[in-house]
Image 1 (cartoon, rainbow, N blue to C red):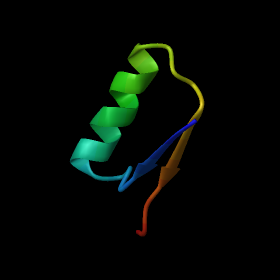
Image 2 (image 1 turned 135 degrees about the vertical axis):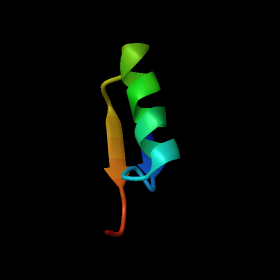
Image 3 (image 1 turned 180 degrees about the vertical axis):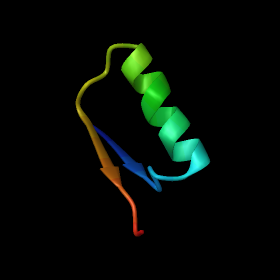
Image 4 (image 1 turned 60 degrees about the horizontal axis):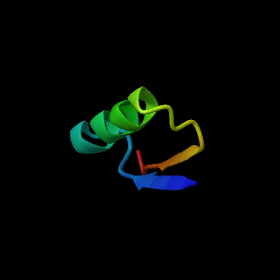
Length: 33
């Protein structure tokens, strides 16, 4: 499982996109909007 903090920001959202492109689906995104 990957935990991405700040997932709504530029770096976090691109990190999640890159992980998805590699086939990773077990991602938890955490952000304080």
